[in-house]
Picture 1 (tube, rainbow, N blue to C red):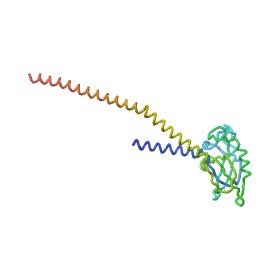
Picture 2: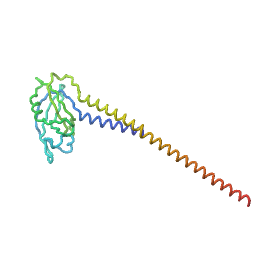
Picture 3: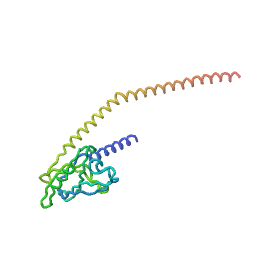
Picture 4: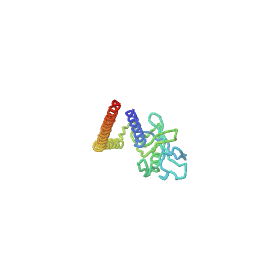
Length: 224
């Protein structure tokens, strides 16, 4: 039972970390920009999918924001909508302050299906229509075509660093357990065994004592 619980907790932890990394780490889409716009957007229970208020996109007391959006299309015809918000000094740490400049670059790179200009939009986040959530664009640059290979160097480096940290933390934990926890558990086990042994000896002595008393009393009964 305990093994199943540990496996369940481990799988849940891996799932949570995986979703967190997938949302936060930069992703790259090769698309064609079709439109750029500003829209008044209602922010309510979906606030977690938007930037902090004081990064320049709204006020602390307002429930609506004037947010920049970038409409785009993939080579296969599917479409995507990106928001264009500053991240400031808050999470995730993209330190983005140039959303106005990025919007101008996106508008300059608009193209039609007849004469497409393919671009790479680097973004983080998810598109969830149910929650009106949009990925946040952080960088745009043109490429030659929709089949250009993009190597996610940042993701690879961060994942290697994360794996290294996990391995080091595991080694430190194993050393700590070997040097501190296991000896303490062994001492506790020996102490408990010693207590049990003394208790067993005490029970044997008590049985012997009361047995002798019983035998002595039986001799008195026999004399009567």
